[in-house]
Length: 143
Image (cartoon, rainbow, N blue to C red; front, side):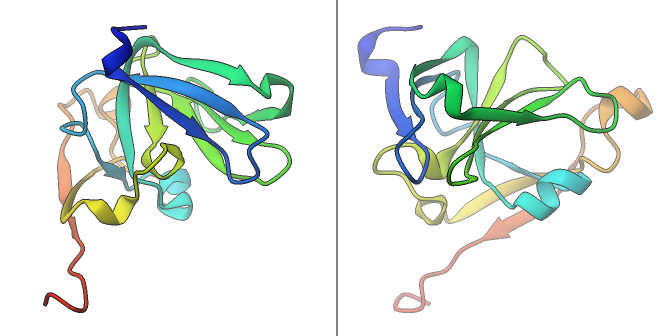
């Protein structure tokens, strides 16, 4: 993990799983993805440093899911069902963290979230990753 000031606390909904995450570039790495799984899950994620997710409590409550190539491993709480983080397919040494699980952070804190084209993953196409669009959030009382 990085310096203590870089470490963010997180948890699932029921609190059974508690973790620390060290983001690789703060919230500059937030995104959503259009792959079949992420599209249904709908989470906004931020990238963690290599080894940047440390489970503090509830490792036994975590369950995981793999699909397609099986390279990415998605973790969620077996009690409340909340997705907390995943090991990335494009960089198996890195993780992505559900920002909604980080203490004091909401996916609605971000006015714009880049959406990446996960339907055409670089590992499948041999092409660079492509931005599919932008998700925008405008508060009703401000827009």
